[in-house]
Length: 297
Ligand code: ADP
Image 1 (cartoon, rainbow, N blue to C red):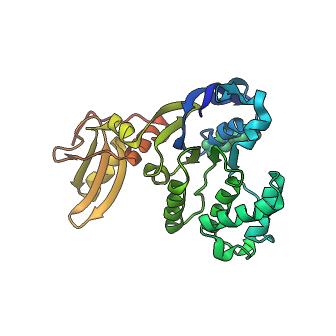
Image 2 (image 1 turned 180 degrees about the vertical axis):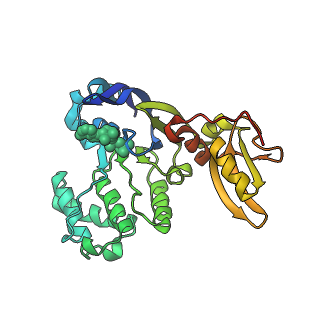
Image 3 (image 1 turned 60 degrees about the vertical axis):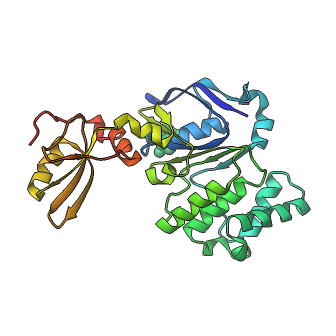
């Protein structure tokens, strides 16, 4: 099984949101990482056939999805960002409703929906109204509904928005429990959502797929460029103007800064292993700002 995008481009008026995006995916979990407005939803809507690209093709098993629209819909599970939950339905009633829309016969549907609600940890609250569900419970219900047709491709648009840290952990566990013979793509602007769970991460910026790879591969791009130093609050403020700071924390002896820089930023700075968070900040530094790293303190 494979999904391939060939030179997908999309503009809204004069704004080029996607510029010849090309990549291929085989079964696995992929994290599409990009700042808000970087085009993730646009890309997903094109993959799902809900939006026409200006140019380019989406191919499923080497055939354009436009030539196999019905087949493609039957293998697709999509959780949009603005998913509509019908608050007065119970979780089970909602699942049965979606199952009916997807054409499952009612006996098979009930069994499948109950199994899926158990799988996402909503078995005990399946008869409660959705309006009583927490944000995390609603998102798990969202995942459950994408699974009704046992999709080969699952597309989850910002599935962790609004979740608290505990719900995020639970969501990640749920994702890693999904069977591995599907292509699962989730978008996020939060690094920790995908760092541990995704087999590969794709970084989208300025309409271009900047890079892709495992978290390990990607961070090696800035190996030797991440530093930590203990400085006074005053020095820290000065350094913040000149360097890309990936973290600042107070310490009894002053301020510990984590800095991404090709050069040692202060004589006492120590090199530390890079993380995906550092890399993300490196890619998404404000306005692609270049720092004047030439004058070390
Ligand atoms: P993301 O999902 O990464 O936040 P989007 O795909 O939603 O990004 O949006 C990418 C850019 O395209 C944004 O600048 C957004 O304002 C713009 N955009 C999205 N949809 C439309 C639309 N229907 N009409 C005009 N501009 C749009």
